[in-house]
Length: 267
Image (cartoon, rainbow, N blue to C red; front, top):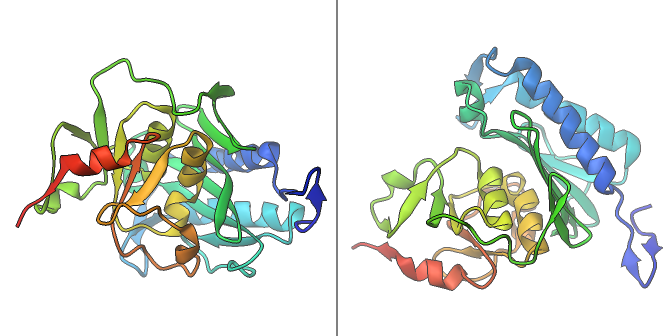
């Protein structure tokens, strides 16, 4: 049960590493079955959505209900179930990077973040097209099974910063250095966590966009702060389902403020 404790006062997680990985891989199989053969439509919020998004979220919810019925679920496509404000919550982004998915690009992913009372404790980001899996569990980040050291791996290339897709439409923000956009917030945070990217600028997002990525960052000492204030992001403020009010910055351990100083706001 979610309220049981295991060893030295630690709370036992209702979904362990194996369960989270299994959920992500099964979800990925659904996405791959329709990849490059899918038609898109507009959701009530105006964003692009596919039947694969809905099918994946329905599958994840059904599996969670069967193996961990005490876990609340909040996701992009369906109404929240259970009490997301307390206890255990799984934040589900069935296809993070739907634009990329519809365009036939491989940088879409499954993003599952497990939180306890609003604090991320585990997460998995899975890119089915590459069979590329990031898993944070027990305070350790693993990339395709290999443990990522604290702080991430030092890049063997000129550093770059990842940005959300509409970054170029924000003329008040200017960033010195290379900027790249791959179409998925969860993937961006994964790349920062393992050290492939210096940082990622995140737009106004929902809980399901960043819950898994925040768990990955936490596992290696990475940072997720609000771009304007530099204050750490508290995911509990997003449990109601609303988007964040400010942009965010994900960065390698101890480097968020340095990156923030490279971002200029023009009058």
